[in-house]
Length: 513
Image 1: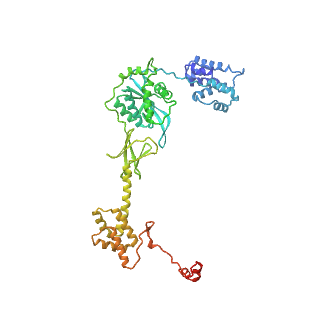
Image 2 (image 1 turned 90 degrees about the vertical axis):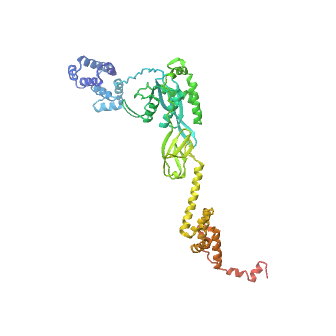
Image 3 (image 1 turned 60 degrees about the horizontal axis):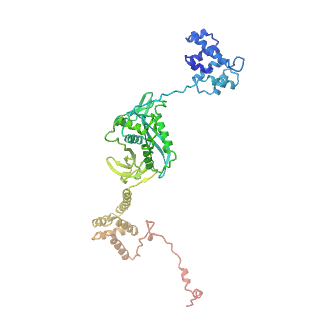
């Protein structure tokens, strides 16, 4: 068959295509082709003979119409192995082919180069030599306020196949580092090499064999004394252990499980990894369980340092006009004097602390919900008090600007520990009700004595109005601005009341007196 040329011949496929093009398309003799291409004439004969033999298998006894195009088809398919037969048919028709598409497709199928599947060696590891790491997605989990995507961090020891499993919502750098630290504690040691898929959490950039690791992974590997190693591109056999571990998690742990709480899910995962996952047979030695092989491997793991690597999350946040800092999809309250500031969030799995420089300004339990407001009651109370005081100060500023004479009364009241806010509100009301001239005169009279209470000012105002022969002022305000005495009331005719005194009206209502 024609496609056998690509696997049987020891020369390059492009040389085969050129031999066929020169022989069938240009009608060159074999010797000329051999000299032109620099190959032995027996090689040219073998290629031409294979092609003649394949073309002779066609159903038609006549020479194939494809013979002049055979070299072009083979050369094109070598260059574009995935080219569709319909497109190649159109290209050949443009070059003069008059045959039908069915026979053409049959010949294309025989000519198309076959990709030979690559075989992989089974990689065997020494105890304590290697562990493999990867993330896996496990759908979503309902949380307060909505849903969040659920992920699993998986690390497996390549020799014993012991599995560490941890679920969470964070697949960022903080969650990746925390997964390593907890896995090392779970195993009681560290493998000499950790193998990563080309995750962004581990590998920032790669150009051939040149790899640039994330600096957090570089720092972590230096702290625990292991080698961080990415898998080679398209090397499916190198990370098969962690992929099979993830499949084991899906089928043996996750299938049929109802999950409502992340903490309970991780507690169940710890129990499964420490017990049920350890009783399965070890693929490296089917006569022993994973637990038995791990007992052999554990003493060969690198020892853990005295203190674990720090796993606190650190993030710079910007607080807007409302006193809340946004972190991990939720809002945490801060003191009202922290608005319009850049703060730093330092978080663990249980606690969220917020700093303004070196000053701790807020401390909250962590929430894994969505769009939740986590508030400190002291922050809310302080904000309400600040807003109330701001209103008092605003009114006080207006009063002192309008009637500076009232300052002396407020100073006396403050010395006697009276309520400044109440006094300001009452004096402002008197100023609006009686007018500026009367108010300042009354305040000056009170200030000349020893009194300081707004009631004294009211008493003087009422007395002065009575001395002037005027009606008392109704101090009730409409909508907080316009006094009742300033309302315009149109006069009404009283002629109708005179009619009530006539005898006819009295008789109508049964009163003839």
